[in-house]
Image (cartoon, rainbow, N blue to C red; front, side, top):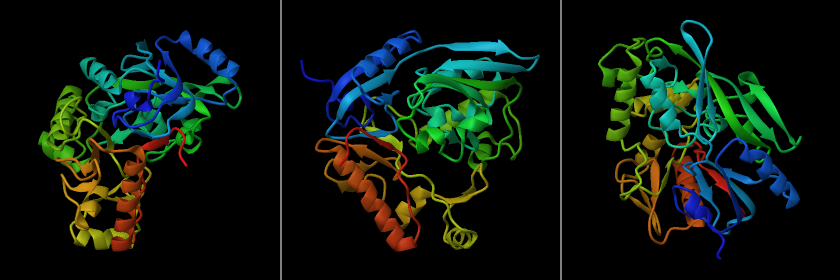
Length: 344
């Protein structure tokens, strides 16, 4: 029987064979997985949720790939308005945000429509429309491969920053198993993102009902081509391929004067629009980057894979785009998807 491929486990559908694949469907499966991996004398496996933010190597992975497919939400009442929500790592983030909206629980409504699993969300402090995981994460449980035991980490210990965390900066050490969020039964969090306020027809700092914000975010994401669909020309993608780059105040002033959107992230850092920078130097939706690799028909910042694409070619395309932007503007773009597997 041929080895399963990493391509079958990722949304880009690129990547070579994995020597072993273990699917974790229930929390009780984890102890067996750790024992099996230990018997193979592996240090740590490649861990995937939905594979929506990764580029898997054409060479594959000589070892075990773990697919985190655990599901479940447990809500614990803290007081009259506060609820602690513990979620299994494999639970789809879209399902969690929809559940929270149905329960009128605020704090995650702007994260609706983001693909991937709940366990993957703290790794890059997933965020959108002015909201991010660090706003509501209370603590999480994770397997520490270096220490060989389970650990509970409060939010502060996770070192969550703009699209970054201790898990992202030290890949391979941690496998997140559950995440607990503290949500409130109240109107939505104050709207801080201008395009969302415009979508809702409300001023900044307004607090509409959670369900209204959820619907507005989904509508805006759909119109901008930000929803991952299983079929169609944009089905094979990894979302936005670059982080919005940090810029100095001087750069921000210069860029704003030429029409580039500039915003301040949750850490107080000025950031420019990566998509605008790509279009500024000539790239457009539908543009062919390399063999089998194009900008999405809806947005330049999403690259889609087609027949003839390879993981190596995709990674090289990101390097080429970043180089072209830096030559033209002096600003460095950093890829958002994580590379997994054996890379030269």
